[in-house]
Length: 220
Image (tube, rainbow, N blue to C red; front, side):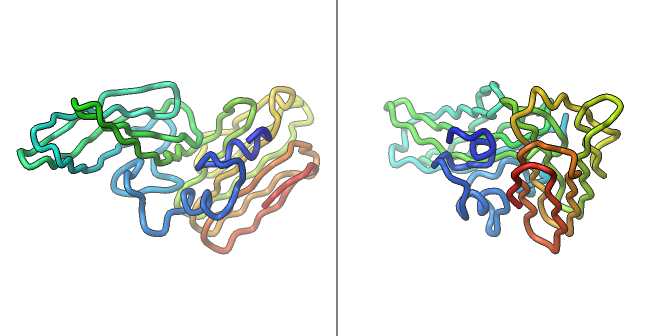
């Protein structure tokens, strides 16, 4: 995806934002490898909090030993803890602290010593507001959220206020190409002021939401 907004919300990497991405964003039946335990989806982990990932595997080569590598999507790769049994079954577990809010594509690669390997992918949603590759990510919680994006006439900054933020977060609009808001479940109220000329993509999720775009091209 070349458009930065599409790239930010294209969770499965096929170049478009469609129902498959929404099903990853708001899972109805969980995922094969959950990004955190015991819940998945928007609001799974707070900014500065720890995400957990775990899963199970089975190998017909019962004598094989295995290693699991976790790419957390923020430039960090760690070796997971692996537990194995004598019948080729096993499990893996890993944890990671995300310093910044955002939506991170997480992959787990499990390899045995016969050079066999398999990779599973999922998504970690970290509540808060931060900029990634020029796109402002605003990630809500699993409850009803109130999110406001407005221009600050005194500073020229774009101000973000929300019930899940400790205070106002301010961003330089000259350094932004757009904004993506992942509101999550619950009855959310998202309002982008008319004087904000930042292209935005608002994903409300489940619940009876009130979504209000700003003064640029917005998709809700």
